[in-house]
Structures are given as structure tokens and as C-alpha cells.
Amino acid sequence: MLKRGVYDAHGDEVEAGTPKAILPYPASYPKNRLGLAKWLLDKQNPLTARVFVNQQWQELFGRGIVKTAGDFGMQGDLPKNAALLDWLSVDFRDHGWDIKRLIKQMVMSATYRQSAVISPEKLKMDPENELLSYSSRARLTAELVRDMVLATSGLLNKNIGGPSVNPYQPPGLWEMASSGRGQLATYKQVHGPGLYRRGMYTLIKRTVPPASMGIFDASNRDQCEVRRLRTNTPLQALVMMNDPTVLEASRVLAANLMADKTPLNSKITKAFRMVVCRKPNEKELSVLTSYYQDELKSTNSKTADKLLSVGEFPMPDNLDKIKLAAMMKVVAALYNLEETIVKT
View 1 (cartoon, rainbow, N blue to C red):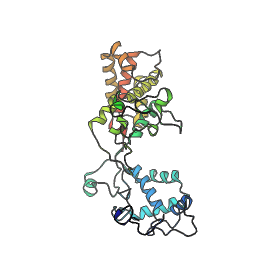
View 2: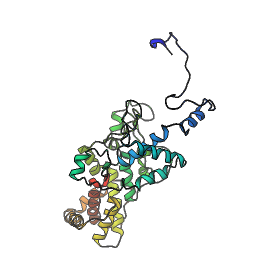
View 3: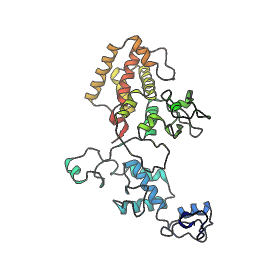
View 4: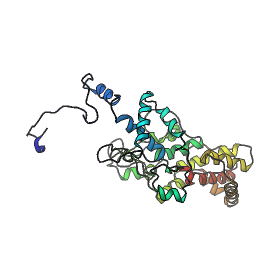
């Protein structure tokens, strides 16, 4: 250790170790990465299982049992239900650290399956839902917003692994914030199946994070974020209305619907179930049907061609372009519903 930080004032010699307050490092463990891994997963270590369980709870409920998911120390919050956190942690550890089993336990619980409708009594008693008296409302993370759009349209590339990709991005954005030197001086968009990879494979340059994902509060990788902030801004609505990925997905899903030889109501019901994950009620179906008819009347060939030109995915030649454009507008409206990107 350097005394007062002076580079030539050497003090006591120290070596790598672990906090004794958590668990003294067993003498039988080697002092390397293997030993550290064993120490982390030691049955006597009270922290590892609790931290992981709390993070999974946060992903599903929007808030951890310990609110400060990145700080279990003296300056962090106490758990709102310590007994629940203890039980989940021990159960998770004793069942072989089975993550799938843990998540299944949580999502099948009565607590998770509650309604998000808040009564005045619950709002007064539990305004921040610390007692989990109703289901939490949480918007999908930035990567999952993209994944949801691609998956429901049938565009999602499900390949696992491989290099990062450069999807659609506003022209010139990358170059404005770059030095103009090196391999990443210009933005080279990927083509083909790579355009439809999961959000987690999107290349992130810290000086120019992906614009659409940044607007949905994705991390810019400047620092580790155990818990992302969730903001609500008009820019998010503009992304869902104008982003090429959303418009292309709307076109592709609309084309798949129009290829079905089913009545209009059945097409719209199918789209609603795929995007919103429930059946529309009569009022919703009536509004969407009227919207389709209005768009059908107001759309001409030139407008349809411009609308359908977004995105690189090929468009079938045997479909009526005006009807396809009208259905694309209906699908795009579904993608812009709050219920589509907010988990309730």
C-alpha cells in the first residue's frame, strides 16, 4: 500500500483476498480464480445466492426485494421481505443453482399473477408496491423492445452466438461523433439475416450508442449498471412510430396476415393476439377495423409504394399494395400501444 498515495512511499504489503465479514477464505481453496469461484458458491457464503435471486426478482417484478440491487452493504436498503429472500436463496442453492426452476417458481406464484389494476385502498396503503399488493408495471428493456417487434413479425433471427451486428441507424450519426480514423470511422450497416438479430448482439460504441436503444434507457457501457433507470419521454413514441425496424416488422406481419384467406376481423384478431398477447374486445376490434377501412380509402398507389419501401426484407408480389399498406398501418398502431411494450 502506498502511504497517502505517494508512489515511492511504500507501506504494508497486501495480497489478494476476500472480505472476511462475508466469509473467511478457506485455507483448502487455492488462491486463484478456481478458488474464488469455490468461495462464491460455498454453502456458507450468504451473499451470492441472495444477490442473484434479487436480480431475477427485479427483472420480473421491476423492483428487487432489496431495492438497491447493486449494493447489499451498509449503505444499501434492507430487504422488504427478508424471510422471502432467505427462502428463495436457500432453495435456489439447494437445487443446483437451477435458474430455469427459479424463474418458473416466480412467474407461477400468485404474487406475480396479480392484476396491475390498483384500487384506491391499495394505492393509499402501498403507493410504491413495496408490499407487492398488486402486479408491477414495467416497460420492456431496450433490447427486448426490439426483440418483441422482430419476434412477433416473424423476422427474428434466433441464431445464438457470433459477432455483433450493425442494424439500421440514422445516416451520419456515427460519423459526427467519431474521430474519422480507424476501422470504426464509418458506420457499415449489416444486410440480410444479420439485420434481424437479437438486441443483445447490436454493436455498441460508447461514443455513439444505438440511438433507438439509448432512447429506451439502454446502457451506454460507460459504467456497470445493475439496475437501469426507466424513463418515459415523447422520443420513445417517435421511435415506435418511425424506426425502420418497427415499420419493416409491421409490413412483414401485415403481408403474412394478408396472405391468409380469412375475414378482416380474423386477421386483426390474429395480429392483436400476436402483438398484445390477448384477444381484443369488441370495442378494440371495432376501432381497428374502422381504422383499416379509413386507411384503405385514403391511401393511393404512390403513398402505398412509399410506405412499403421501408426495410430490406423482400415484399411478396402477389398482394394488393393498397390493402397491404392499410394493414401495415393497423399493425404499426398495435406496436404503438402502451400495453405492447409495458408488462402489466
